[in-house]
Amino acid sequence: MKHRISKSSYIRGLQCLKSLYLYKYYFKDRDPLPEERRIRFQAGHQVGNRARSLFPGGIDLTPPHVSKYPAMVKYTSELISNNQPVMYEPAFIYDEVLAALDIIVYNNGWNAYEVKSSEQISETYMQDAALQYYIITKSGVELNDFSIIHLKKNHKEITGKESNEDLFQITSLLQHCIDKIQFVEQRIQEIKKVLSSPGIPRIEMGEHCTKPYDCDFQGFCKRQKSLITGGQFKAMDM
Image (cartoon, rainbow, N blue to C red; front, side):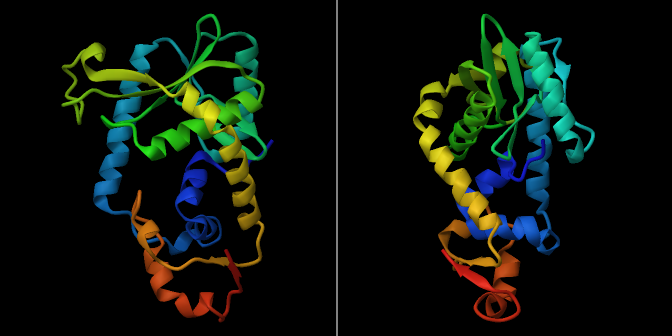
């Protein structure tokens, strides 16, 4: 069971379908990763690892390589069937979309947790949660709740001296996820249509290039306008 769309590519597609297409087919043409973004990624991993201590003793299903996700999806399904109490990075696939959740816990039913290294729950985090809830439940796992584990105020970084109670707060997004089911279904189909198209979507640069994140294909778009509008590559209207 393979996937065409990951959680990160889905979020990218919500920001800009052209960016998603370029990421899939022109990956090597990305702008260099800024140092500050690399630091943020590292901080996110640190927070994610610390959050596991809220639910200790879990099985880590992080694959050694992205090509191993099908095996992890199968293993996750087996552990779900056996009501394995805690899993880290369980993987689910539905409709060619992969969702790798941070933590899932069995306690009189399944509770899903996604970890974020920030104090606020952004709109992007909410879209992320809605997608994961959709994929997990559609793959056959009934969820009692879907929550975000995030940092409490005044904890922008981990020093190692804080207790979990002082560091983390847990916010349920269950109703939001339920309300967004139809939206997620529609966006997945839209993304799949774009990825199957014969050419780069014709989307002009604008505010979406930097919100909510700086797109890493801005350099490509600036250099290749002539190609997109009628040169080597066929463009499609959006």
